[in-house]
Length: 586
Image 1 (cartoon, rainbow, N blue to C red):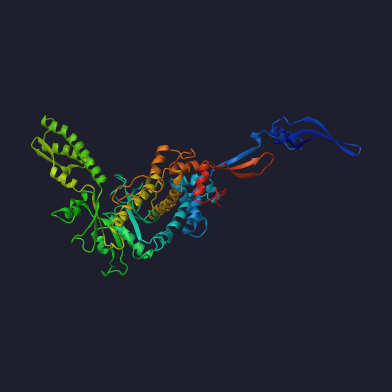
Image 2 (image 1 turned 90 degrees about the vertical axis):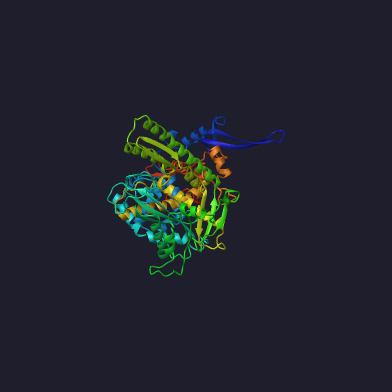
């Protein structure tokens, strides 16, 4: 018996054509020398899949229930590591790290893992076996000793890696402005035996912990290029001197313009910036852009100085000169939004301090708190809470306490609200006033990178390593992971809440504003296709649902790797980084 399929065509009186298929169960037999067919049943009325099943059974194909046709023997998250690895390959990161080998595979896996699932090295080693990253790179069985050896290998190659990144992003062709940004941050360590560990100013607000400092060098767009780890008590100026030496001596870059904040590029560092150790001038002078501290701004304002309050009107930017800064241009700016915010914050803190002082004064007046020493201790606790003691005049006479605001001092400080003054030796023909302001404000990109490295994406802190080279390798891994993240965030902006094409302000002094597209994303939460926008971390988690499965078909002993059907967002994520969805990473 067999199933016969007969295709036919019918044209009705109106000339409309209809194609159809008739399906019959027939028996074929030989009658003498002739082959005859006997129709046993008309199957045309049955569903197509039923007819297919009957035909397959007649051909001897074994039929099993749909749920038993295949067996998934293993399933590993794949999409997130595949996407980050694809971006790393596109950026040439494997070749940047060094020659092929197990050490490079481990180092690359540490960087990819830091982007996808930041954790301690011990947790990362355990995590590899549960993803395709460990299987495809051949590191699923790696030990912590293997990881530490790879970190030592990577640390030894830091200068070569950063020199190639500097040539790629800070060289004359990719960076015609010859500009580099530099910032310094800190993170605390667990343990006390690291040679770099020291007590210093904690930018994390982590009191009582030893810490390290690390300076980050970026291009004008905030793309990380190099990082240097320093003892935890290193000051900003010393860190700046160290990175300039690296740029000059190891990267071989000349005529650079360094941009740093007011605490980093001090007058003393400026004087030494372009001098050799013997005191002679360097033939390749570096330019710089930084800002004045508040005392210097007050001096420019005092006694009819060059900086007057004329900027408080519609004009928010002006160039001035001062004999205190020979050979330099001073670009004075006033941000009215910042001025209003500082005035509001100051008044709130003063009011909060006054509110705490009122019951203390009442206690003294009622005799419940007596003695100048005891009163002074309580007053110290109050005025130090909001750090407003300089704005209050506290008088303790015997058992009498009075507190009043230093209004003249408050007004003098308020006069500086919203003002900042930038200084640079670069001629106006090369960089005009608005460009100077824009360059200095680009330091926000360095701060954004620190935020991504420390908390948002890469979770650098706290540092658990004890050996100095391991600490440096750990920070280098985080910097290279930040380099990856920088490119991924830009590529995936259409799928995330990341703003695209921010509006250019009418004045560089004006505060940055979100684009209309970014506001629409935050408001609607969904794109035109109805897909939800995600955070960067949320998109990685969604990509992780794209798994690679080991499938075994019934009746066979061989397993076949197959990917789950990707969602439209997962397909677009790979399209945006210019890579197909790979079955394997290698």
